[in-house]
Length: 430
Image (tube, rainbow, N blue to C red):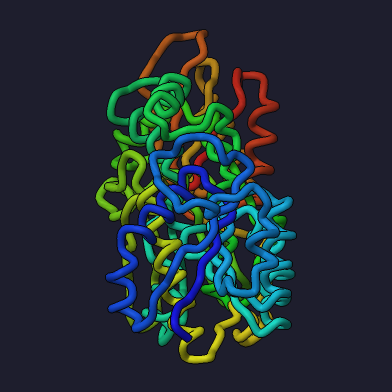
C-alpha cells in the first residue's frame, strides 16, 4: 500500500477538529506509522458554511454515499451523532470492508452489540475512543495498558456539563438553575441539556466502560440512572459540613454476587481524588487486581480533545491495516456468567434529609422506622429549632440495602410530622 485513505461523514465541531488535525499533522503521521494517511473526502449536509478550513475542490460533498461507495477509502469516520442514519452508514461501511471510527456513544450503547457482531462478520473493526472520555485515552488504557488486570471497579465523572454545574453550585453557592445558565453561556451545556443533566450521557458511557471491563455486554436498560436536576444548595452545604462533595458518578463494580452499574449523584469524601475534579473536566478511576488504582483525567469534550481521540483511532486502525489484522471489540472476551444486580440489592451508606415539624418524639419515630428496615444510624444533624415549624434533620447511616432504604423512606414520608419528600443520597465513591 502507498497510502491509507480516510473519509469523514459529519463536518460539525468535532469533524472540524479532525480535519484540522489530519491536514496539519499528515507528515508527522507518515513518520509515526510508516505510511501516508490521507483525508480524501468529507461529507456533510451543509457544504456552504465557511468553517475556516480550506479544502481541495471536490473534497467536500453532501452525499455520504460518495464516501461509502468509494472503494479507495479504507477508513470511514462517523461524526454526525444520533442513531439514524449513523447506524446505517456504519453498517454499510463495514459491509464494504471498510474500518470505522466513531464518537457516537448513544449509538454504541444502544446498538453496539449488533454493530460489533457485524464488524466481526465482515472481518472489520470499529474504534470508538472518543465516545467515552473525549481526549482521555481510557478505552485504550483498559484494552491494552490494563489487559493483565481483572477490573474490580470503575468510578467515573464522565460528563463535563454536570460536573461544571455541581462545581459552580459548591464553589459559589448558586442554585442549580443559575449554574445551568452559566454552563449554557460558557458553551458547556446545550440549549436542551436533558441528556446531560438527567444522566443519560453518562449512562451511555458507563455502559461501554462496563462492557469492556466485564467482558459481558451491558444493556442500557439494566443501568439505574438518576440525574442532578433536583440537587439543592442546602444538601451541598450539609455535605461540605460532613466533609463530602456531591458528584454525578458513573459506577461499575464486579462482586461475587453480580455486577453493579449505575449513574447517580453521590456524596464522596472531599479528600478523595474524584472530589478534586472540578469544572468541565472528566476523570475515570479504575481499580485492577494487580495495578491497584489508576486515574485517567482530562477534558472529556470539545473540538480538540475529541479530535485527538478520533485521529488516534485512525492511526491505530492504519497500523492494523498494514499488519493485515483487525481487532473486533468485546466479542473476543470470554463469556461472563455474572448478571447486573437490580438497584434494590445494592448496599451503600446513605444521607437522608427530612423536613419535619419540630416537636418531641419526631426523631425517635424516624429512627424506629429506619431500625425496623435494617438501617442503622451513624450520625444526626439538627441545627435549627423552631417549635411547631418545619425544620431539616440530616441523618447519616451505616451501610444498608437500597430496597430497605426505599421502603423506609416511603413509610417516613407518610408520617404526619413529615412536611416534604425525603432527600436521599448514596455516600461512597473513591
